[in-house]
Amino acid sequence: MALRHGRRDRILPTPNPLLIVLCTLALLIGACGQDSVITTGSDQPAPQPAADEPGLAIRITGSVEGYVICPGGDHACLTFRGDVEPDSEGLAWVAGRIVDGHLEIDEQLPLARRLDRDYINRCPDGDFVGPPPEEWLLANEGMTEGDADLPEGYADFWDSDDGVFHIAIAGNRAEWEQYLEAEGLTDRICLVEFVYSEQELRALSHEAEVLTADWGSGGASTGDTWAGVLNVYVDWLDVDRRAEFADFSAANGDVPVVGHAPVEVLDDTFAAYEAAIAGATAELDPAASLAATCGPVRFSSIPPDLDEFPALDAEAEQALAELTTGEETSLEAGFLEVDDRTWSIAHRSDTELILFGHDADSAAVITDGAVYARFDRNSADEPFRPSGWGGCWIQVESATYGNASIAFDTTRPPDPSSTELPLVINERNCASGRAPEGREIVPVVTESDSQIMIVVLVEPAGEADCPSNPWHPFTVTLDSPLGDRTVLDGHTSPPVTIGEATPGEHE
Image 1 (cartoon, helix red, strand yellow):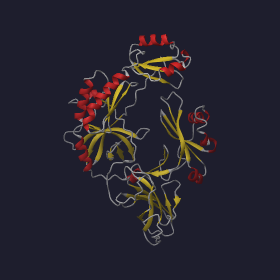
Image 2: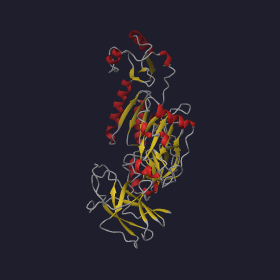
Image 3: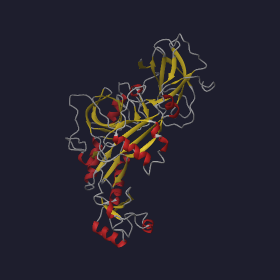
Image 4: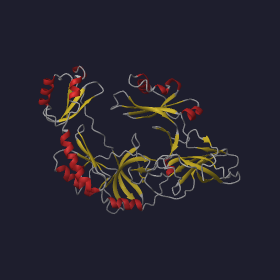
């Protein structure tokens, strides 16, 4: 069987409004903006473009799908040349140059991760006898830095999963210990020390928003007392902006200022980046990123092999047992019907585990769907804990374009002797009830001697409401005449035989 995609109505290398991209590009701005070296937030310099080599040097964080890397937001997806190994979430952080419309990868960099603080050693469970008295909790429910009864340096107050209450402080520990003793809470509340108080970071956050207000990119900032940093979020960063951040950070003490942006332009301006994208000669093919998925489960082939993943081992069985018998999850996870399904390991890393479960009968997968369970942990020496689960239907999807259902066109009966197959399509994504006129429609066709499987991809409509969409006429060109072959709608798996659209539902 040959997998191919049909002719297009038009070609547009557009951004992807549907793809939700997690952009966590963390650059320690205080080390940037220097004339000689552009840093990555570590001690290693980012690669610089050679003087005699054309192109625009950028750093980009985004998802990798097929042969495109998508920085997120409204930035265009790019084809790339070079090796990229996405992480467990399908993300990558790379430095490279835009040359002839492609992203030439110079280096892949590690994704920055949130700093995890360890407070367990400060708060051994055996030293605490339970939550503070209810009257104290009610009286201090709205604790803030400015409360007259509290010592200086209050940052946060929370109840962790182990039943121990915590107060995060960035002040004099001795004063807080005296305060807890006076309140009779020494053995009920754990003190966790932070570097900066909430008030300090809140003031600095306001200054950062003033700094970015005239950049025209919707700058926002948040102070993270837990990590002891100020996070500043902008649409893009270039050399000039990093220099401004460096000056800003230097003027505000030792608080780390972290910039988050989908795209960083390393050696020019963002206008040059936009110009390079606008002049791109590369064709971004939505069919190239076609994949079969079921919730967070991603299969390696189309059609998917439901049994491609390895069977559960002892660690995975323990995690699944915790989900279905644990006090907090067993009732909610009861619908998974663990014993009646075939389970396998769809994905595993040091910190994440995804299990896939399905009925042995493929017909039941169509009518009832399948199930998945996701588990997380902080390190490899901890057990996996349930973090999400649910039912899912297997879909064949593109990373950049949406799906459409297909049916025979009752006004244009198919001709077995023709290679032109008239159909009607119904867009499944929100399109404000409008037909996909003026938007690209890409048929992906798999032909054999006995059947024709078709997946129709539609360019997204952008921001839209979600009433039902109309049927829309569309013609697929086959490699050989239709004959008596069965036509299948392949956007679900297993694919389904198409029928006729309800008369009057399309023009």
